[in-house]
Length: 304
Image 1 (cartoon, rainbow, N blue to C red):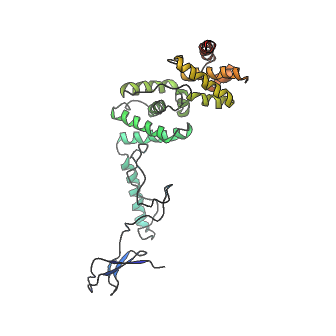
Image 2: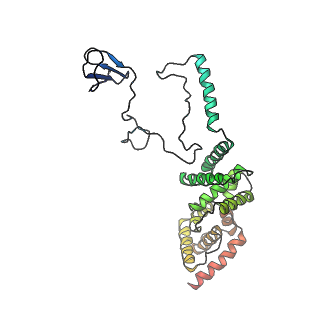
Image 3: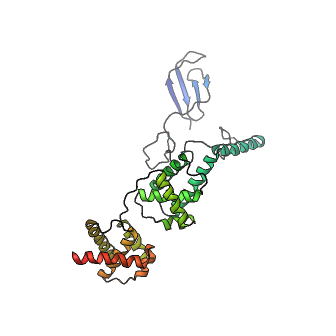
């Protein structure tokens, strides 16, 4: 079906009539009186009639938002993979080989310097770890920001990309209060815990990061789900930790250790049979740590 719109504006160069007709299918602008074609290439500046966003009512012609998780911030363009011209016709064999060479040089030019290549590889590693560790977009965005700051300070040179990526992700988890331990991140990226800790201490010192105190209550759900504890025990452990925080017992203690001890005491209180070894495996802390933290929490419970 032919779609056309009559507009009044420029005069026809042939007859001087002002009734110009726009054909929306072919993109032609022609005179409605004599049929003279003024131009055959009109760009559509109107709204999109299909929306790829969640909001179906928004049909504005815009691109994707910028993001720190992409090495080019999502602002660069690439040559498409379709071997067709603007009218939809297939390219000739000679033109197709030329376009292939252009695609190759286009991809190479986007990461020309060693710093760009380093950043691209680091952000790809972060994207892989995001799925492995079930991290949110906000955590990865913060980690990418920290990594870019480390590159500005020239902390990347001479150090492994995996180590710095893991350290930035751990710093981001600490900053956003996401319960992920050093062991979790080291296991996810498959490097030694010592290397991650060394890189974390470096960026913490050089970038002067300010980290909030980790709340042990956030680790209760994680340990309880791994150890397959009931909701009753979990709520009891949270109540114990809230009382301990008011008395200042949790200050300076390992959050996962004191959360595991609170869960063990909660299991004893609710009659659920879970050994210290099972909770130790679920939390990643030793049984000795759980016993030591239990001693302090028991004194608090007896005095209340």
